[in-house]
Structures are given as C-alpha cells and as structure tokens.
Length: 171
Image (tube, rainbow, N blue to C red; front, side, top):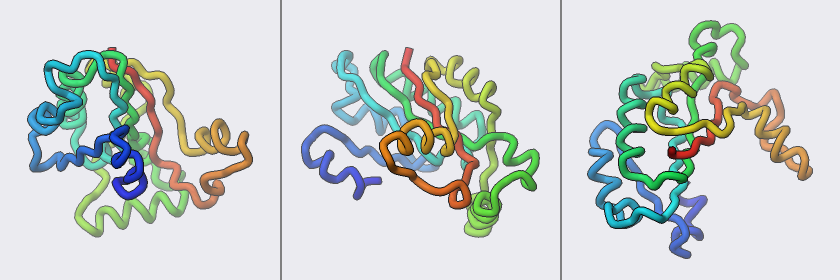
C-alpha cells in the first residue's frame, strides 16, 4: 500500500502510519501523529484497516476501534474489511481461492481466527462509535464501481470472496 500511495504521501495529502497490532500501542502511535493531536479537532481523516480483523480476536478489533474513535475527528471515514463468519461455518461453499488462502495463512503461522456476520459487525461498529454507510462484497464492488466504467477488478473465478468491505463514519 505504501508504494501504491507514495505519490500522495509526497504531496502531503496522505499520511502513511503503519501499525503493528502486536507490538505497537495504537493510542500512542496515533496520538503522536500531528493529524491526530488533541489540538486538531477539525481535520477529517480516512482510516484504512484492511485485512486485519480476521487475524485478531474480536475483543482486539473492538479495542482498536474504540481507541481510534477516541482520537479521530467525528465525520471521518473508516474503511475496514472483515471475513464473513460463513467462511468458517461452511468452507465447502468457499471458492477454491478462498480455501487456498485460508490454508496458506495457517501454514505461515497467521491463521484466520475471526469472522463476523454482517449484522454482528454493524453492531460492533455502532457500539464503538461508528455508523455503517455500506457493507459490500468484492462482487458488489466490481458490479457497482468498476463494471459501470468498463473495468473489472477480477473475474468471479479469480475472486477470493471471503472479505466484506465496510465504509463507516465516525459519529
């Protein structure tokens, strides 16, 4: 991601703040950044938390969301992904790619351990101070945003349709 947005970072429009959820103190890490200083109560942010929730316990996801909520400005946007609980309940319904991904992450010592239902994830976000604006799949994203402009992210066969994509506002 850092390489992908390098041109935006150089233009001072984007700040890249990597976080290791195992070793870093999230509150300290965010608070040390000028964007999130207690004096800055007006600058809106877009926080991206992709590919994290499936690797950490639900309690850790809730704790992270609450800590972020205490620091980021109301009205800011959270882009976050989660793995649908159905992936854990019935792996036979998953695509070959999704099953391979789950095996590979386990093999390298980073298994997917957490899934949510859409209702459960929306409730968690609400409890932590966020309001869901949308909750979509990769197929939805392809159809709604890319196909209409003549592009397509991946074919249905290539997709690992395990993650859901959520846009939420800080309230």
